[in-house]
Length: 482
Ligand SMILES: Cc1ncc(COP(=O)(O)O)c(C=O)c1O
Image 1 (cartoon, protein in one colour):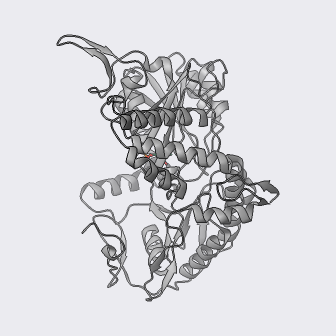
Image 2 (cartoon, rainbow, N blue to C red):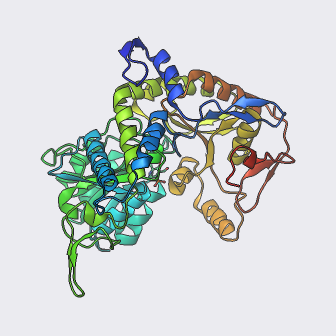
Image 3 (cartoon, protein in one colour):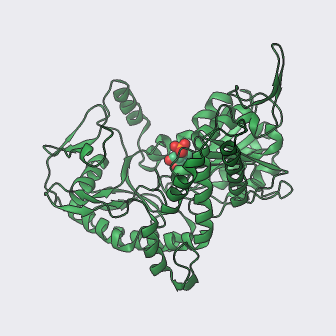
């Protein structure tokens, strides 16, 4: 890797990316925690589940702590603390908008809990009817699928056998339903395969067909610079959604960033305090955006944390993060593909690492995915996730599960039995992960593939999860509220 100027707090010197990203680990709260293993030893915890949630950056936590004495009601109190908190909340909105190059005259930043809430809000606020078409894709997280099923007719763009979106199928759908497609709602990066569709090219196609576009950026935004672009640009994004807990700010805030005109009229799906200008017993004057769409007292702490995290990401450099994670992904694909019995789903070509996210799904020697996850955790101290990752249609497609089998496990789940749920094991990288950690993962997978693990594992019927029999760490000895 080439030299670069590292702008992260605490290390402004010129150094290689290896050194700088290694130093970045000091900024991660909870890094290298010592955890117990089945064999009685302890090991430095390796966290490879960043697609689910990232840890918190130390400077974000420090910022939250600095803010707490000033925490107070926003937009309503006249006391100094309220005014300080209100200023912080408004600044947070500005910072989030700037991070995505939104402009205040065309766009609005609406804070909420997370991506799921943001997409649900949009699905309501677009005022769709069942004759309207929303085009999603086979690669969507359920959060960018189920809300649209409730409000419109959903059509799905197909993906190929590696899980890559088939743009020609999008073209066909746009053509077939011309005039009825109100929205193309796609993920900017898959939480299963790391596939990144060309969002601006898709935006151009959607706009040419008279539709708007939502890009679910829950996975993309922590790893790549995302630009809204001006509404006059055919490649602009009409709406994007993000989750703070996937961007080193796990304090319960995410955002919907979108075109202001959509939120200037209509009644929000949640109404109450904060959403109005004036109320009489018979009339309501709704507030202008974003207030109309932020019902109740907002999560000021979460917004402050999210803004601080985005400032940190800007300083570290999104391009540097992308380059570091691509290098790590390439390394991991090379190492994992050499393990006998390990098969990677999706695009396994290490040369394509720069064009995808650092999310790698795999199967190991026909072992149940939950068992592999349990062994990695219990015997190696590696935290990953397994299963279908809230993307059942996508994962069953990638695994080539027949309709008959899908129906079988659906019936079983309804009856309280998850033991046969299909799924894969997933590792997902954050900006602070290292090749040394990947080495441990590869060593662990190679051992497991050969049957070299000690524990006897039992599967729980209801959850489908595996546990090492007789091994019950006292979780409250690590953290307790009692
Ligand atoms: C692609 C994608 N979209 C949406 C979500 C939902 O995010 P949240 O749980 O923060 O609402 C996730 C979460 O993993 C995701 O990966």
